[in-house]
Amino acid sequence: MLFAFGKLPIIDSLDLSDFPFKKVIFGITCANFLFERYVAYRQYKLLKSENKKVPKALEGHVDEEKFAKSDAYGLAKSKFEMVTSFTSLVVDLATLTMFSSIWNYSVSIGNCILSTIMRKPFVMSLNANNIAFFILSQTISTFLNLPVSYYQHFVLEEEFGFNKMTKSLFFMDSIKTLLLVNAIGSIPLYILGLVLKKCTENFVFYIWMFMIGLQITLFFLNDLVIQPLFYTFTPLNNKELEDKINALAKECGFPLSEIYMIDGSKRSSHSNAYFSGLPFMKKKIVIFDTLIKDSSIDEVVAVLGHEIGHWKMNHISQMLIISQVHLTTFLMLFDMVFKNAKMFADFNFIIDPLSKVPTASLPGSNYALVNDFPFLVGLLIFSQLVQPTNLLMNFGMNLFSRHNEYQADNYAAKLGKGEDLKKALIQLQITNLSTISVDKLFSMYHYSHPVLCERLEAIDIYTSEHEKKSG
Image: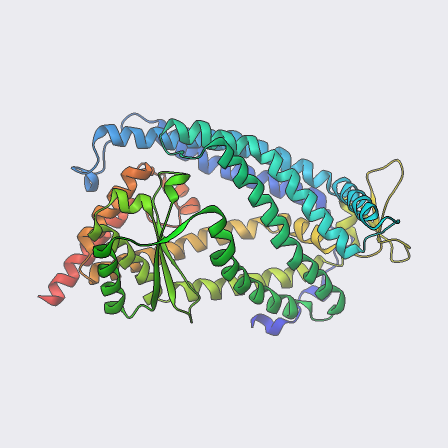
């Protein structure tokens, strides 16, 4: 694997003892915010312009009323995102400033709860402190995000007819999500803490191995536990559709095991279909009930032909490899600063190996005294530091993803399903009110799929080429 899991050659020669971590991170966070506001403003300006017309590729499929409603929905989302992005910036900067205070509160609460349960004074280990910090941070984040999420569902989505959730279901989903994140997140974080403590010399390799195991475990948990908590999976009861899907899978050599329909309409009128299954396993196809309701049988089959195209072209395996390279590089860079006392000191964490307790708050201040490096805090700080690389990675991954989408469309066209796929994509566009007017830079930064007109034009070319070859 990358660099044989060793240190990067420049790491040992770098002196970061005087590096202004806090100032740089605050500057990067603000610069990232300004860049994203610039990209969003370009899209907002385009949606506000009045000289737009239905693209030629959509003439006869999308009327002026639908086109205007699509732009209105996009404009409403753009305005909403402008407000939420600013509040997110304020919360992010405040959180960075208050890391040590949140840490101290989480440790105090954790020690108090455990002392009450055990009926005697109890002091958590530093690793347990990391978990307490994680749980409190997630809880605060969830409650801060509740008003935003509530407005998004019951005002924005409601206005355009997409929201199907009841308020009780909304709050139940929020509670389930918080409990799941805290439960599923705490265990791996605790194990990671143990790995870092035991394997200080070559922790990148051991954490990489652990993360692979974690990803596989989460895949199974998502299929068996997480998704069923939010959706009801029922075997497909449309015999004609089932037969056509099975015939398609057989034609493509797709290792299909089960076909399910889920009640997506319980929460939203948006449509989707996907398959799940690791590269070496049989696959399960999942279709939203909204897609079956709004599309013809041939259109649903064409959409699944596109999805099978991703499998046929090994796109999932390619994405997994890229994610592993990205993870390994991230960990090796993190190794540069993980044991840097200056980075922690900039955020009010004082490292004192001689301290008799894992964590102590300094009286009259918001400093936290710890007897070792709190890895979760370091990970969060470092994640903010590498935002520029994530921005560039975002452009690159979107470019790669759009290339894959074209390939999957081409595969569906090769199966003779180009026209049905076009109809399905247009119907999905109309049903979901996906934005038709899209700024180029906005699309490059935010869209993992080509815009509809680009896909329709490409499918026409693919279909024509395959017809010539077969003719």
